[in-house]
Structure formats: C-alpha cells, structure tokens
Image (cartoon, rainbow, N blue to C red; front, top):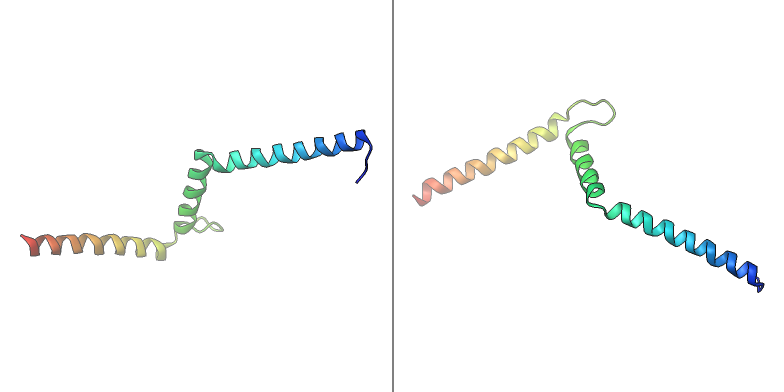
Length: 82
C-alpha cells in the first residue's frame, strides 16, 4: 500500500468501481423478471431434457400421478363428509 495521494485516489476509485459492479449484480439478481426467469428455467429443466430437448416423461408422470392422487383424495373426502 502506498502513501501518495494519487495512489490512494486510484485505490479509492478502483474500490468504487468494484462496489458499483457488485451493486449492479445484486440489482440484476434481485429483479423480479430475473427471478421469474430463473424459476421458469428450473421448471423447464425438470420437465424437459436440456441436452436433447425431449420431454422427461418420468417427471411428467410423477407430477400427473400426484395431481390425480390429490384429486382422488378430495373426491373420497367429499363423499365421506356428505
């Protein structure tokens, strides 16, 4: 670390630039559109194989089975309570 005013000014300016870059990254990452885009990409990756573009039928069938199970549970509960 140097004690000359010009070196100190340069270090301060470099620190400001790093902080500005960090703030820009945080703003980008926390922007609602960015968050939604990440979540949509995660869901797509779960149901579509990224390498081939083919649907991942195993995960699709798991989801459909879960939905059918929940609907069946509601139907049974409704019949029991009425």
